[in-house]
Length: 408
Image (cartoon, rainbow, N blue to C red; front, side, top):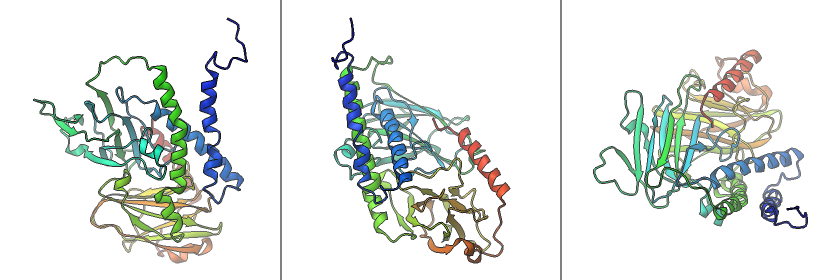
């Protein structure tokens, strides 16, 4: 058969062009939501953001809940949804009527859990209503409460009803659940050992059938809708709208458990707005009891700022507490030469996020804007100093540590 270029349907080109045509106008639609769309750097960042979301959309839109696997969720490549740099998140798409077996090894991360909720890829409510937010939590299973073998191994059954005669660890699968997230939270990125997780559905045949053309078309057709919905949420959803309306360079505490956050966790959040010669000093008490705490920065796209190659995050293991028992963090584009620095990577605005997890109290930090030249005057006299060589070594250690953790 000789291919006729005029026959678009001969090789299915009309369908392919339909997919591409759906993606084409998304940049303009999302750009209208920002006042910075005239900036060339911002436009380049937007294009990069959209390409990253194509990969996210593909991963989860084509996932099969009958044959799930744990796929990389929020990470440093996608960066969307202000992911915590200390978290490793892997998500499996499931159906609320299935029977699933989850097995693996707990590892030594500070926190290891399974979370049920909505998923980033196929949550119909976000596609239908872009002002809603993905990831609503339906419960968290702390793996420390599981029956663990001497080697840290576990086996959990997930189903709508406990099977008759089953006496092992079981977790009820509630209506509306479309995903299970394996969450690991690390303090010491180098020495804590990642867990391993596997999932399979037991009420379907072991061999997966070939996916039909109709199913593939339906899945691929949702990718552009997901990107549009997620982009809208990032710039004009309830959380970002609230933050943009608040005074810049201030912080508040918020509960995100209804949006997929942990139920025993408070978020510290606020927008930073700084000139090149300005910095923020964040001053906070630290809870007497706190299973985990950490702070990091995000950009205008709700993406966490590069935490692999820049010093843009701190946690209870890496930060220094001052001699008076207070936590002080400097946010700036220039390195202030102190341990507790969050690098904006040259951005004049973005967001600060912190987390207090399972704490005795949840303090709201105080923020002061100062000149770069005056930073040390606002810090205790005995604040440690960090040389350029020490900072370079710290970033190299950080980059190595991230690659040693499971991200894919």
